[in-house]
Image (cartoon, rainbow over all chains, first blue to last red; front, side, top):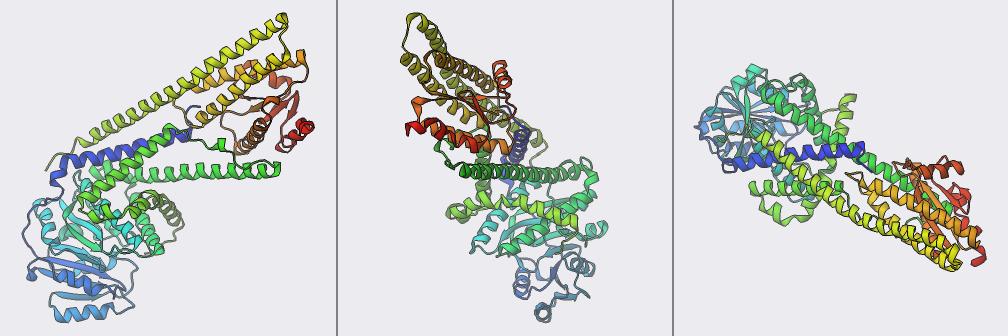
Length: 412
Length: 220
C-alpha cells in the first residue's frame, strides 16, 4: 500500500511544522544572547490610554500599577476612557482623578462594544508624543515603560513596541494552561521580532509613536483584534513593531472555559478579518506580505487541514467500528478479537510522535527562557494536558471562528 | 543585532534534512520489516512447491491421504499465520511498494495451496473443509471494510476452533493476478468480501455466521 492523498497531506503538514520549528530554533540559536536585551532609552513624556468597560473589580489595581511605573511622575499622563460602563468603573476612576492630577477620565457617549473606539478617543485627547495603551485588567511591571521606550527612540521606523504578556493568576487549572501558553507566545514573539515579523502589539500593554498612529488612521473600530490590525497597517506603511522581552505585563485570563472559548473566538475572528483585509499583499509589501501574511495563512491552512484529516479519519474509523460491531452482533460473533489490535507502528506514527516531542521540547525551551521554572518543573499534569488537549482545541476554535465570521454573527 | 536574513533558507535546509532523515529511517525500517516477511515468504514458497512435488510423487509412491492432508494443513496454517502478520503491516502505511509485491506472491502461493487442496479432495475424498476468503485489499469503503472485519472475526473463530478440519486461505481479490481473476470469473464473484466454502459462495455475514452449524454440526 503506497501513500494515499490524506497521507501525502499529512506529510506536507509535518514538513511545514518542521520548517516553522526549525525557523524558530535557528532564530533562537543565533540570538540567544540578545533575547532579554533592549536599547537603553531616556524618559520622555508618555500618555497612557486605558479603555475600560465594566472593570470595576480591576480598574483600581490597573491604575495603581500605572502610577507605580518606574518613570518620572511628571512625564506620565493617564487617560482612562470609560466605554459607558454599567458598573462602578467611572466612579472608581473619578476618585483617582481627584487624587492624582495626571489621571484623567473621558466617558464615551455610547458603549462602542470594543476597545478601539475608546482608545482612539484617548489618543486624540493625549498631549504627549508617545502613546501607551493599557488594558484595564492588566498590570505592567514598574520597569515596563522605561525598558520599552528605547525601541522607539533607537529606530524611527519603529511604530510600536510590545512586551511579554503573562498570565497574572495561576491557581486554577485553566489559568495554568494559559500561563504556559502566554509564556510560549511571548518567547515566540521575541523570536519573530528578530526577523521583523512581530504581528501584534497586544492590548494589555503596548507603546506607540503618536505621529505614526495618527498618520495611519488610529485603531480600526470594525476589527475584533484592533491590536493585530494596527500592526499590519503600520507594517503596510513602512513601520515596524518590536518586542521587548525584558519586561512583562500581567493580564487576567479567563477562569471559565466558556469565557476562554469566547475570547479565543474573538481573537481568531479578528485575525481572519485582518487576513482578509490585507490579502492582496500576499508575497508583496516587505515582511507583511513576505512572511507575516503567509505565516498566518499557512497556520490557518495547516490548522484547517489538520482538523479535517483528524476528523475524517476518526469519523471513518468510528463509522467502520460501529458497522462492524452492528454486523458482529447480528452474526453472533465476537465484537473484538485480540488479533485486531495492531501494534505495528507506521512511518506516519513515528513522524507524528517525533513532531510532538520536538514541540514539547520547544515549549520547555520557551518556559526556560521566560524563567517559568515552576510552570516547567512542577506542573506535569497541566503540561501534559496542554500538549495533548489544549493545543488540539485551536483548530476547533478556528473552524468555529470561520463559521461565525461567514455568518456575520460575532461581537466583542 | 545579529543578522537573521539567512535563517529562512537555513530553516528550509534543516527541515529538508530532518524530514529526509525521517523518510530514510522510515524506508530502512520498512525494508527491515519487508525483509523478515520476504524470508518467511521464501520458506513458504519452498514448502508449497515441496508439497506440490510430494503430491505428484504421492500418486506414484502411493503416499497415504493422511500424510498429504497433514502436509497441506501444516503449510496452510503457516501461510495463514504469516497472512495475519502481513495484514498488520498492510495497515501500517508504506513508503515503498515492496509489500504489495510480496502480497501478490503470497496470494499466488495461496492459490497454489488451494489447487493442491482440491487435488487432495479429488484423490482422498472428504478430509477437511477448504475455505477461500476473498477480500478487497486496496482502500475498501467503510461498508466493505466493516463486513471484512466481521468475515475475518467469524473465520478466525472457526479456524481457532476446528484447526485440522479447516483450511483457511485468504486471498486479496483486487491485486490483478490472472489466477485470482480466473477464480472470480469461474465463481462469478463481483463484490467483496466473499467466501468460497467447498465450492459454495457465501457473501453475507448472516449466511457466514451459520456455516459452523452447516459444516461442523455432526462433530459438536
